[in-house]
Image (spheres, one colour):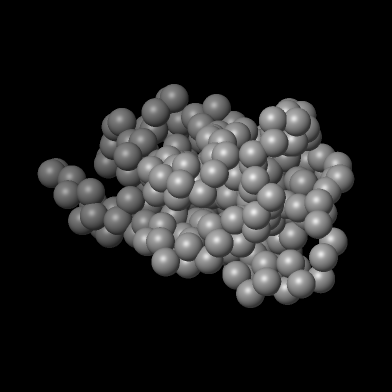
Length: 247
């Protein structure tokens, strides 16, 4: 199942929070939590599930956003972060740059600039710049991030049913949707947990958690949603071994 990209926002201005929310309202993003000071930001960073942090540099008139960004490098959980500021002071920019942000946005901004900044930050964090433009997936932790039309989509790895070769592309299937990706089956397979995603045919990889029935005599696998997958002779023995199938 696809989910929205979740954002942790450090911002102390209610007006700017409203503007930020409106800029995201038409896109596939949601604000997971809002911190209005450093203490809240640190607590939320370490306790909530989110994909990217967006940090206003100035909180209560102080450059606390830079302090917070410096703290992030010491946290166990690492996430990409973007600076958001109305300041055009070169000294502030130089200080912010030392924290190695994944993007830097100057207010005022528009929703398209914000969307691009988020996508570029996620790409850079995954060390695969340009991947989303080429409709190649980014695998970060337990999620895939892909571009579908004009939106950035997040898909939990566990929600993938199977992947199928379609010419120069691959179809990534969930219970409810199909996504066409410009990448090879081997590339995708290498990004996925080997014990969970098994090859059943030269053109298919399946999520073992989605298997409902296996018909060895018919070389057929049934997944949730009555999705039928071929089990070829070439991969049958290895599949049986990995699944501990009793004949």
